[in-house]
Amino acid sequence: MNVLNNSEIDRNRWDSLVEQSVSPKITSFSWYLDVVCPQWKAIVGDDYSWGFVLPEKRKFGIKYLIQPFMIQQLGLIYLHEDFNISPTIGMCLEYVKSHYLYFDFNINGSSLGTGRVESSPSNNLLLNLQQSYESVRDGYSANVRRNLKKSAESGIVVNRIDAFDGIIGMFVDDKGDKVGWNSSKSLLLVEVLNAVKANSNIDVRGAFSGDELVSGAVFIGFGGRWTFIFSGNSGRGRETSSMFSIIDSFVHDSANQALTLDFEGSNDQGLYRFYKSFGAYDEKYLRVTSKIKKISFSRKFGALSEK
Image 1 (tube, helix red, strand yellow):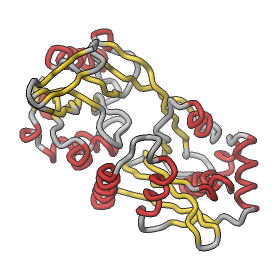
Image 2: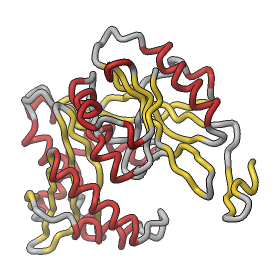
Image 3: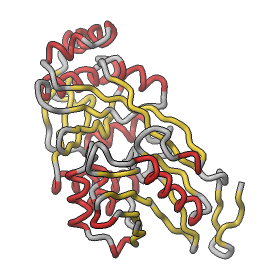
């Protein structure tokens, strides 16, 4: 295996690997990683036959691995279904363990090869769209059907829109303080979504009550996988159950195609039930962590304390 610093990674060969890989994810492309984790590194096989992202950051001379902003999971990227996954993941995690004092990030797949580090399973939910809209809708829960009826009776109309600023603004007003959101995150999110617009596919939808935008969602896609990456809601949006209509609108327009809707979560039980209620199925991924659970930084002393 070859461990490559950021400047040593051949972007064309890396992106070709991602594009041709089994279950390619848009968040693994170099142009996406360059925005959210500018110092990322990679372990790659000969001739870029496989790859493993190292989401490295540095602070006061200390290097560590942390899950990047707006990426749910990274992990092993490979070209063929019969690839020998377990020993390769094991080799990569052995490198992580021996070269990083602190790490906390998510990888795709199950428990293969993770005995070398501490790990815990996380929830992801996917919705198969390779069937008719009517068939997908048959899988909706009774609660989804009630909320779609409520939304329709409230006069909610869902349209594709060009700008996502209003959706970000709604999210900040609704949840910003609760999740520690700040203006730098909003700016970075705009940079991420603009990178997607320039390099791949983006679908932005807004729910309107009259002329008022009351909720919105952003879907990003590559190949057969579309990701529900971001959403914003308002009081009126919740009152009219408009987010149900946005997701249903995307499902309606995407059904009968070789597509999968990736809800990107969730470990939050409320969100898990919400996504599951559309007929989604589970896909586990893993959080891998170092024995050290916290590392504090000091400009003068570097790693000041470890717990």
